[in-house]
Image (cartoon, rainbow, N blue to C red; front, side, top):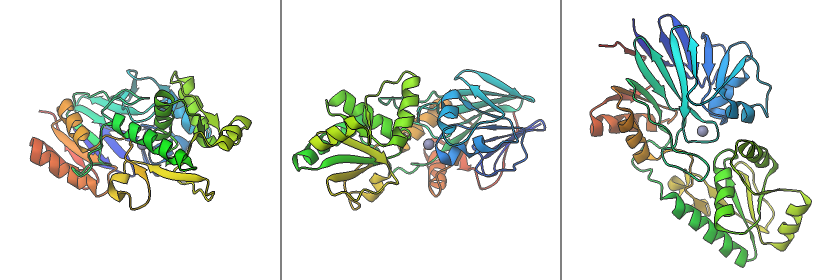
Length: 333
Ligand SMILES: [Zn+2]
């Protein structure tokens, strides 16, 4: 028998006649179970497909169910195993956002680990991803080029705080535009820990903050539009956090982007900070080393899939390629 892995609008795994798919982007794939790694929309569409069994962590389900009701869904905890035919699937912490999971798949043909999006450093709100020994490692390549080297996180937080105070001295309200899930909670926590400034967040971010709080991660914030938020806004002594796709026309606010992609843009598109909930290139390499795989398959990185695979082959002498090129068949022995 063999363990086959291929890209089919998601990561499709086949072994002993059983087919399961991870993070599918399209409906209608022939499989018996969907596993979703985390609640970011580019990974969690499968939770909306009503005609198939699904699993994710409870936290991921809670965040995703703000938009649609979950059916035929089984919540998982880290360390819990699900049996699907002859396949055994176990969730581990991925360190990316609340509830994010790596999935380990054990079969009689070998062991596979799929990372989804991951982070390999402790952050203010998450613990670093947990490496797992495996035969095949399917790893995200979002920042899979050596170009992407994030500064130390404490340094980024201090830069953001410094920028916020300077912006207030200039008579403007400092405002961070960022991912509503992951980065937004990190910024709230950083300002809670490093300053006494009130933090005002957009309603969509507040909903997610509440789920973080429900799971034991304390965050102090005000909700934009509330009476308290209006008071601190009038005083000018506060920080705002808004979703990254929102544009602000009000000249009282000065906006900065917080995103790993700001390393690419530099300051050409205005003030920005390279805060990310992903592993950078060196962290990806460290994580691969820690998992000791025989084969590495890269995904979710666009053109960086190929670059990361080339770097893994060159630096580590491990067979590596982008997952979407051809199916990979692994035969034990
Ligand atoms: Zn993500």
